[in-house]
Image (cartoon, rainbow, N blue to C red; front, side):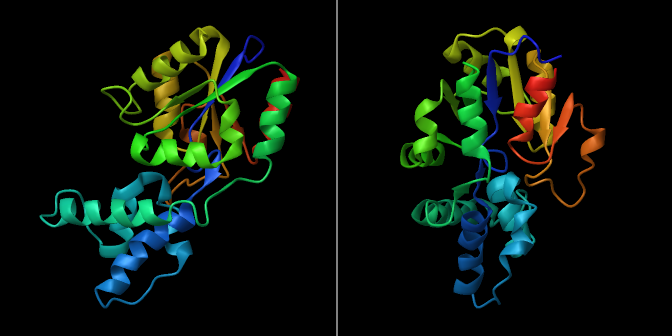
Length: 221
């Protein structure tokens, strides 16, 4: 299945980097500023992959339909922007994984729904992204995942066809986007899966429990 892979594309948050603490604390600062008790970082973690929607949902029980949501989202974005490099780190094994891809002469890139406002400063500040052949953000194309457009743009940037590409992510939308773009997918089971996630029901072609497991998957195929 993965024998012809020449490029691996990754989701960002929950797949390559662990940003849950910075995302959660940005929302928690908003709670505390309003006289509400602080919540533990663990309360936010499972929803970190949903960005502002997930964080504001945990912090205030709000959905995007609420009248106050838009203003709170902008405040969240400002607070997150101020602290997004404090605690965010690559997941364990990510360096080993990317080194292994380089040894196999495989290109790699990022396809995220996170906007350029946050993705590009993160990528500039973290040395591991210097080797990326493509970085596609949530506002790079007119569509976000699960639409295939971001993946197709990343493959264009990396100069690879769908038949030579693989996509790895920690959300069902990642699997749906990969399928729509015509590439096989791998579910990152160590990511921000959410309380209701049943990863074995996702339309994935394989599942990994730590980043370096992908190298074994590529080697064994």
